[in-house]
Image 1 (spheres, rainbow, N blue to C red):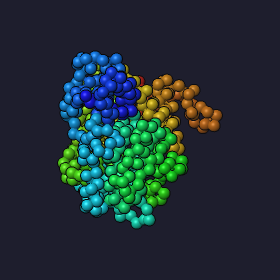
Image 2 (spheres, helix red, strand yellow):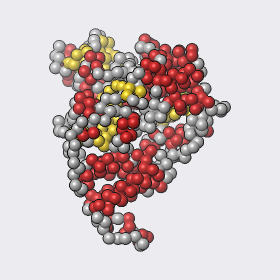
Image 3 (cartoon, rainbow, N blue to C red):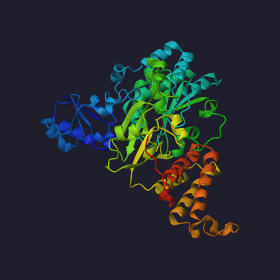
Image 4 (cartoon, rainbow, N blue to C red):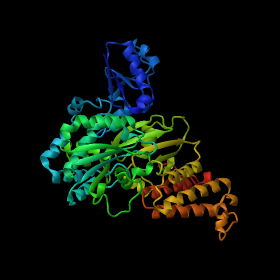
Length: 513
């Protein structure tokens, strides 16, 4: 009997270690294998017994399952409806392999992309990545091929590959899952990138809140060293600053400096880590590279929607019935992701809002669920898909409170380099507090003694909203990086779609398309 249980951090948090110990005690002769996670988090701890799935399992369920009780049975995991609708490339091994088994990795196509990359050479590698249409999976969606070509053409004594694994967005966990479940894929992708641009060394910058991922990466680097040589990789651990997810702040931190945004130009592709040309891509971008090289850029380019090509590991979180990781080509509608795949809210109440793209992403109501999940569609709707995180809220959510959270979050996490972000987020939080309180003057910064030239009479609600709107415009177009520039997205979307939560007249609701 083979019993497979994930050692993913989310599974462990749900009790997977205790379940594994219970099976070991109940069945001393059974083979218990700790695998990566399938990504069906609502079923964790998920147990596979000879490929038959059971979940969520507690230690108290073990005896009944072994006695033939099928109340928790879900059938073959790979055939589950949640899995059957997916197109898994980046997460093709998820749930199927042991994370630190070189045998498992090689048996499932590992190192094939690197072998082909070595055979075709740097220029052809860059051409394949360009043809694939691969774009950065961490935020702005910048074409990877253009970035790689720029670094490849730069003249310098040394070049670097930097993996941005500082996954700090709320509702996102794909980077962590891949680093914990398929670390060799990330290392292979980095080695291919190094070969393409002439870099001999890479760094993985991981947030300190991911201890299991850090341990897995260090172990994988030691095991994979002969396969990726002469390319070398080192893990660097961040101290938990959200701003270090921004590439130039990350580079400063990597160099031992304060995590603070750099002015651009020069771009990191010209002057990045330690002043040298540097490819900075996130985990999901680099982990897609081995599949592109193994199967060809044209196959990857054949998937997707409009200018968004390939697949996206989408993370469903918040108040959602079927929370987890769902990888599919770009183009699924937001409504299909939330209602069909996510199953609506876990509370059973109506969906009121969905935030896409992390804490700086816009909120959307159900009448915007016709939006296709791709970069341009969300940019046109004053939002972003970011790292692919979707957080669901039911009809009890207070959207003014959510808007205030965005400003408060930005005020705390700002690096302080530029005035629009450093000061604007604080003033935005204060303005939202005044809107909540009805605009009382005693709470206003203008009443401070040093502000003797400012008016002290209370502003109307309309005036406060106009001030908030003007402040958001200043932050959006005046901030040095995306932290301040995107902070207005959740605020303005909440104000636009749910004005009643700000004390304004309700917006007329159109029927969802």
